[in-house]
Image (cartoon, rainbow, N blue to C red):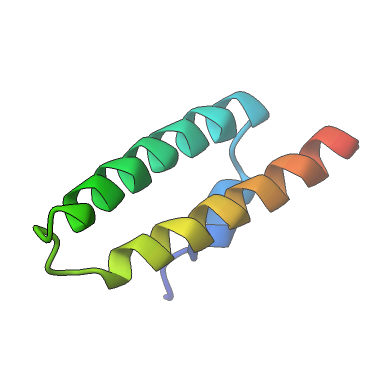
Length: 67
């Protein structure tokens, strides 16, 4: 059986959990950007992945709060 996708996983979470998850992702993004600015980041693709992840969390959070 296929494992749950990221979207299925965040759709099951409460708004409070989503806000905490978004905060953690934003902190991780900040850390990656700082590391990249001093040329210490080898996996620069992770910055884009985290941005997409934050956008997905925001989308689900907005839809939950509008209900």
